[in-house]
Every structure is written in C-alpha cells, then in structure tokens.
Length: 165
Image (cartoon, rainbow, N blue to C red; front, side, top):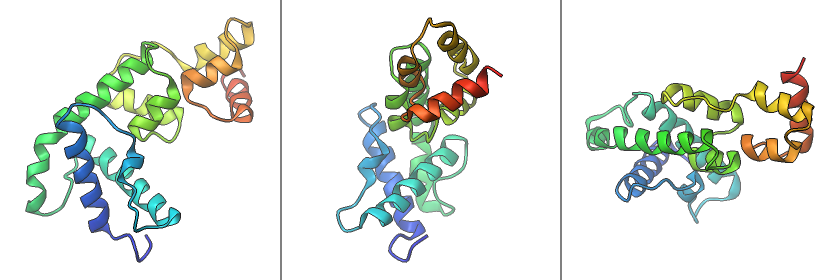
C-alpha cells in the first residue's frame, strides 16, 4: 500500500460505497470511490482495496476491526442481495458480463462464477457450454466475450482452447 492510501482510507471509502448503494438499493461501479486528490496509481490502490474489503465483508468479515464499524453490519444483507440480483441477472442473460464485472468489482469471469457460488445463484451458463457453442458455430466469439465480460480477443481464444481440450 502506498503512503498516500492508508487502510483507514479504504475502510472509509468502502463504508461510503455501502451507504451510497444500499440506501437507494442500486449498485454503482466501484470506480465511484476514486478521489480527486489522488493520482491514478493511488486511486488504483484505493479501488482495489475497497474491492477486496467489500468481498470479505460480503462473505461475513467485519468492515472494521473496531466497534465504530458496527453500524455497517446492517448493510451486509442488503449488499449481498444487490450482488445476488446482479449475478442472477448476468446468469439469466439480462446483464452482460462486462457490466456485471464493473458493478460487482469482479476482475474476471472466474470471479463472477465465484460470486455466483458464494451467493447461491443458480448457474445457468457454464464456461464449457459457451466454449462448445463457439466451437460449434452457434455462438460467435464476440458474443461469448460479451456474456463472460472478457475484453480481449486473445484472452477469448485462450478461453475457448482451455475449455474445449
């Protein structure tokens, strides 16, 4: 962690994010935690720290190790419900993978599947099925990329190769 971004900054940003999404009941991209007084590198550290903190929080960890974070415990279930709705929308085809990654903070399609598992969301679209449909011609690689939120065509080629071996 850099000298500019402290753990307290991450906790504060995570708490503000929880407040801003749970009260209205709508997720926002984690990039909203970026601060104008920080450069790109430090904002990257901040966003990554918030992503990691919220992932642990969603899985039952406290937001802070001290009592001042007790008020945020009430946000755990609403936050998990928002994530669950997002991931369920992704699995039902209503939300593209890139949007699901942006809104959940997932770094990869694998992270989306881990969220689905952790949140008990029914898996309707499996990676192997997507790869098989691409190989058979039923699905274009670009459509597969959109479903999974894979941004790079070379990464998509590697995905298809890995899942069809």
